[in-house]
Image (cartoon, rainbow, N blue to C red):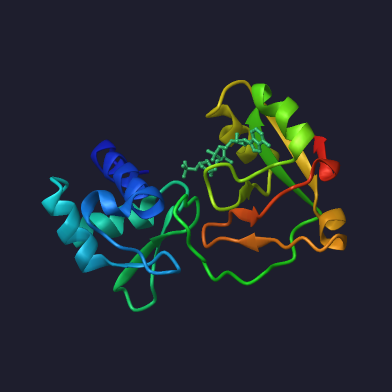
Length: 181
Ligand code: HQG
């Protein structure tokens, strides 16, 4: 796991690469990538000096593998979780029969009425196991885990994607495919 100083820089990188690149004068391309040299220069100018070795450690030891570096080593992006519009360019993938979504009990009524919506993010986040989903839900309050009938959704034409860090993504989960795990 990351030392606490690097955890705080990792949170800063999540903010910049998922939500607000303009805060440090950075741009992302359509697929969410940005030049590492430019990122490090903009971060330094914003009072967050990060060197390449630190960045590589943040990427390699990140608990949720939040960041991906391109094969040529020159660019970086957040693996998922964006609120800014990006097209990650992921190929549709056949999901396991069940996926899970962790949320808080105070959202349940709205979710069972409207289904799962991406809210401020680009897509709905789904987990392959219930324990991971519970941890995600815990961030919002008393957790509750929902299971998703992925095969029913496939039959209705819904598509699933898997981010580089293993997180499953889809655009919307209608309530009829949700159950309590
Ligand atoms: C809920 C973190 C009302 C949804 C986590 C969730 C994950 C609805 C909240 C990643 C709703 C959005 C994503 C509806 C969904 N009515 N509420 N119709 N549909 N919701 O944070 O999935 O640590 O945007 O259940 O670990 O909680 O940041 O999404 O509770 O990986 O890397 O609206 O963020 O990763 O919350 O979390 P979020 P999420 P990081």
